[in-house]
Amino acid sequence: MADYVRQRDLATLSHDVEDWARRHPVAFFGGMAVLGVVIGAAVKTARHSVSAASGESRSSEFEPRASYGNDELAQQPYSYSEAGGSSTVAPTGAAGI
Image (tube, helix red, strand yellow):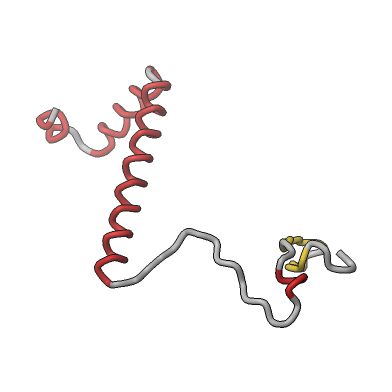
């Protein structure tokens, strides 16, 4: 396999991969999916290692926002809408939405 790669230029290798993918599409896309999962796991592990080494703490848990006098409003879920080219973020139960 190594000799095959060494003896071919990039255009030929690209053509060979395209040809193989056309003949075996399920295997090709399955392999790409597995490769994507492996790369994603490696990136996630690397980011976690860097964060741990630098002393940073990243939590993927939802942290409730602070309430400043209106507990009822603070407990309401928020909605996001884009109407007429402008975007609005407001509590779901807010008047006028």
